[in-house]
Image (cartoon, rainbow, N blue to C red; front, side, top):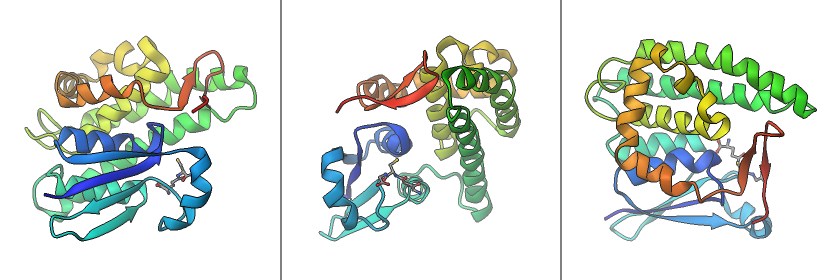
Amino acid sequence: MTTYELHYFNAAARADLSRLMLDFAGASYKNVLVKGVEWGTKQDTTPFGKIPVLVINDADGSTKELAETSAIETYLAEVLGLMPGSSPFERAETLSVVSAFVDLEDNLVAASLGATSEARKTAHEKALVESVPAYLRYQERFVRGTYYFGDKVTYADLKLYQIAFKLEEMYGASSPLTTRAADFPKLTKIVESLAAGKAGDYTRNRRILGIRQWFKDEWTWGFVAE
Ligand SMILES: N[C@@H](CCC(=O)N[C@@H](CS)C(=O)NCC(=O)O)C(=O)O
């Protein structure tokens, strides 16, 4: 049996979706949590000097290492049966859904870059009523069945779930997926269905993980002591 190690800091951030995929698929894996003080010596052992890194231990005893979040997620989607269909086009469409969600996340990051908490508050409040619902509207239109690509959960659905959880963590009941659920019936149904199963177990457990926390009074992400 293949086993995995996911090397990342003690935070959700860039490892969140890979961990969710591994949990959801019931894969055998270990979270290797890198401490800040260890990073200096570990950095040069990684392919590109960054984490996450996925270590793949194959049944024949061979070991491989993969860096870069999107490469890791795409690989996991392929090997864990989370890619839809078999056509290169559908697989590329899956990546397009994920990439469009990454744009939404970049938008949230940009809103957190304001110099003062007042500026960040204004930017996030604007994102909540303008850009985030706009991204979600296109995503809603893209869904083809019970899930994004029919009746099977894929990488795209788990990306939506990770985004929904991030919006909930950041904005609580003000998440557009809550305040405007009626505008996004298909997305809402996917999120609810995933929340009731293994994906929901993942997010309920992972609330304890993370040195990076959202501070609503400052409208920004910050680090807490390890
Ligand atoms: N393009 C990379 C970026 C990875 C990245 O920036 N990782 C950060 C943690 S979120 C890191 O390794 N920071 C330590 C450093 O840059 O020294 C990816 O998508 O995985």
